[in-house]
Length: 118
Image (tube, rainbow, N blue to C red):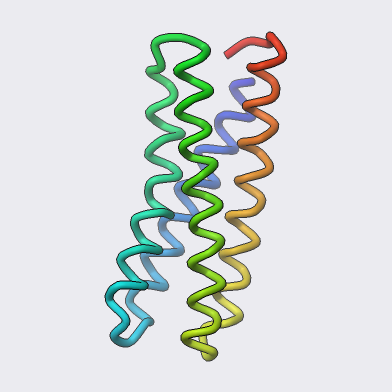
């Protein structure tokens, strides 16, 4: 499980950094920029917070929050693509990265809920 957690943490940090770098490329649209930055950085923050969960249930709860934030990030990438067509390629790549993280989160949640180690 540690290797999976490591991959998940690395992917969430990479997503946050890529979103932060994309942030500076967006002209105006501060609401969109702030929303996408908040959701994308929240993914990793909740994954990291899960390390200090008080119980397996708390661990799953934190991962589920990360899952929701990941799905929200995918939404904001769709909005960004529509609002800034010149950034469609970047938005699509980040949406795909968020989707990959979402699948890893689902697998981790299922593993814990099926009685495997935290």
